[in-house]
Length: 95
Figure 1: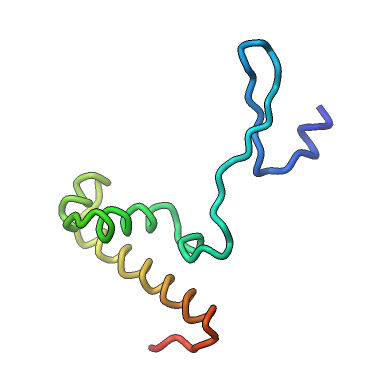
Figure 2 (figure 1 turned 60 degrees about the vertical axis):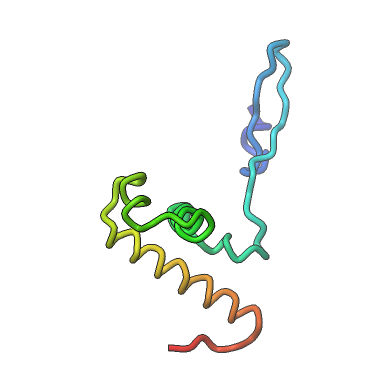
């Protein structure tokens, strides 16, 4: 019981078939990674639109969104990345 109160939030417990508990660290984004500044939806949309080359309409259908909403989320995600990268370089963001 006490272990549950003090264990780090980034860890979860899993029970094996032999009734032994194993600590499994949860995946987390590295703070130095610019993608860590994005929400999961923003990351997903950028992955689909930029890395996989899908159209806004295709992504919208897959995520049950309108194509315009996909474009807006993508635009805001790129603004966040731009600001994050400019902050690392010590440069002011344009705009």
